Image (cartoon, rainbow, N blue to C red):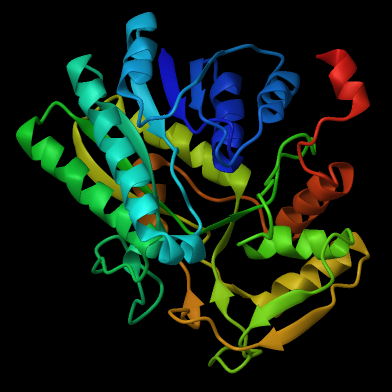
Length: 345
């Protein structure tokens, strides 16, 4: 069975690609490297000992995308490709709307033209906006508070409309909470461009000396230590969730949303404390003001994924921190090519 993975060289896409190859799927990766590195493709091969087909394609280029479908007999698509920085989306909203939404419309149109109607979509817990209570279930109102989240919410609605027009479509909308960690090999992990937008790569870069200190946004929330509480999920657990969702959509039709989280929340300072224990590093931090739109506590109720996908997050906060540090400490400059790797290639 051939699976097309858009954005397969990225953080979550690369880990999902590893799990697909380990499960003996035929893999086709598509990426434009706007926020990913070519070296991650070599690492996927190193980890699995298996090869795959790759195309350097932007979803906004319909002609190039159609060639992928003409060249391959594709059974399903896992769609990661898209811009993903909340803060940046506020600064350049039109770019986010055009890239994320138009790219997905082109993808779905091409899929429909070539009779490929099985889709796993990379959505986000940001579609819930500022929920009135926790844990969050899939039937909560959708009311994202930033352009990035609104692109995810709009795409979910577009996909539902496609299904109404053609009930042969089968789609899983996967709403991630906060992915962290890395593959246990230390070969692939999160390699953000510039200053990290997410907590864990910020912590690991402070630990490695790349950044001076961690900025903690607010310590006056109604939580155990005043810092924000989030549901952190190991990226490998998240990747396995995509395999379970893929298995589900191949056997039914319809559109279903699933929360992928642990169902537990940890504060920023709890994450810092655990990371310091597993790494032996001291993480300098300073308290700064809250960010607009941030909420005090956010974590999932993942029971629907357990019941319908037979999926449960198995890795705890300690393993998340250990794997994050292994990736950062063995790859201090991320995927930047070393002399040894240049010789290998």
